[in-house]
Image 1: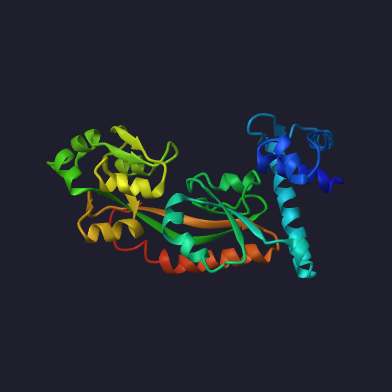
Image 2: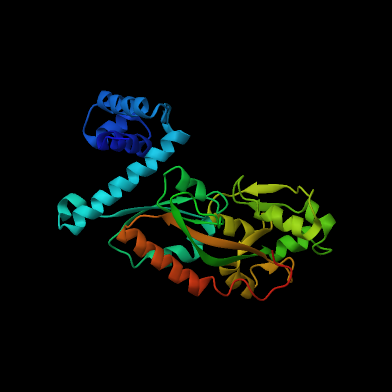
Length: 302
């Protein structure tokens, strides 16, 4: 296909800014011009690319072209930089999808030295973050999927280990007879969001399927940790977060012999972009230091 670069930019702008008017403002054209470019692109490929709404959303065929549009834009920026056209190139921007626990523990320190790159982070559960690579909304992702998304490379990062913990007061109130099938069915748990299955997986590992205790949704990493520490419920926390609170007695283990191990992988566009390569190197190097020791030492892991 002979795809028009202005049409691809229009598609990317509509999705980035959530609508046709805001996309037009970002590209310094009229909303009518944006609409005409999208319609022409849809006619050429024979499919609806954008679901009109607030915000506008990309369709499955549109996701294919959205990823292409973002790759072309990134490659154009990189080419301008390599040619010394710095004013036209601007600052490189890298779009990443990271699971919240990695973001709260090891990812930000790993990327902090890359001061010449602008980051756009999106938080997503590790079981779903690869979707953002498929739909073109991310250049790289920390994910639990070892199967490379089409057009992407994949590299193992290591193991994120989770421990089931609660505050001493919570244990005294809800688990006076210990962590067992009866107490676990009644004790409230803290859940990050409706996609967070880690607590339920831990319950199933301990007692089999079927338990459905009450739960609180707390969709922010710091607040999730605080809710657990303050006794709203028990939760599975990354060992990296839980270790200092276990050491000072703020939290206690529910099952000292069991952990939940989640393998993590880095996936990224298979394109030659130096900023993205630097991000990959920073993340894989940090993961080798931080996550390498997470997969050993406890029985009963998953």
